[in-house]
Image (cartoon, rainbow, N blue to C red; front, side, top):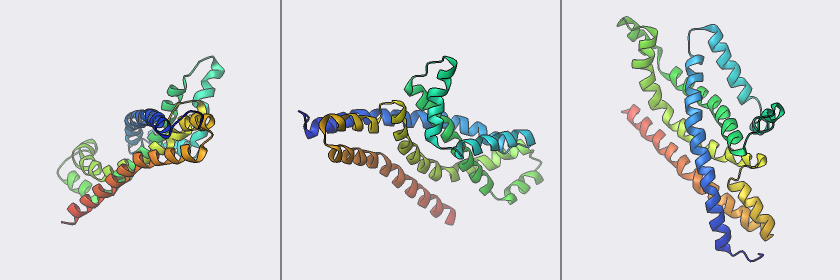
Amino acid sequence: MSGFTFWDILWNLILAARWTIVLSLVTFVFGSVVGLSILFMRISRGLFTRSLAKFYIEIFQGTPLLMQLFLAFFGLALFGIDVPAWLAATLGLTLWSASFFAEIWRGCVQAVSDGQREASASLGLGWYQTQIYVVFPQAILLSIPPTVGFLVQIVKATALTSIIGFTDLLKAGSVISNNTFEPFLVYGLVALLYFLLCWPLSLSSFHIERKLNGTSGN
């Protein structure tokens, strides 16, 4: 293994996994902010605003994430703007994840029964007051399991950023594999580390959903 022990390989992969975690968290935070803005546009009463939000969602959900990362990394370079790999990765993943967050949360907003809105109207609440005080609190509770579940997709999607030069877990695995000539071992450990990152999130989403369903059932 060219002087690399098993523990050397594992330790270097763990160090690289830190950047996968950081990128996932940054994407989650910024994607949530942008996604919330798109959600407000998507459920607004203005036709143009709704259409603009729908167009954004269709563009980013209807095109490959890898293409979006290429455009973020190479597209601005055409205008003489040098974009670091970490910035392009953050931008690409943020805009991509925002489109899914917006739709996930819109589904949760629509899941709140119309009776709740009608009751709010009968109490004299306006559209905005109904959304803020009646709909959103219930939608937030409903959105927790799918939001946590989508975080798993974000973690896995960070692997694509290795194509544009971001040193994440998969990129580190590729470099180590080329130096050790042990691809089965290296990529096996990479897969294991991805599983260890994603499995607790999947488990958390499942337990939260069961708990909420149990609560609603009572």
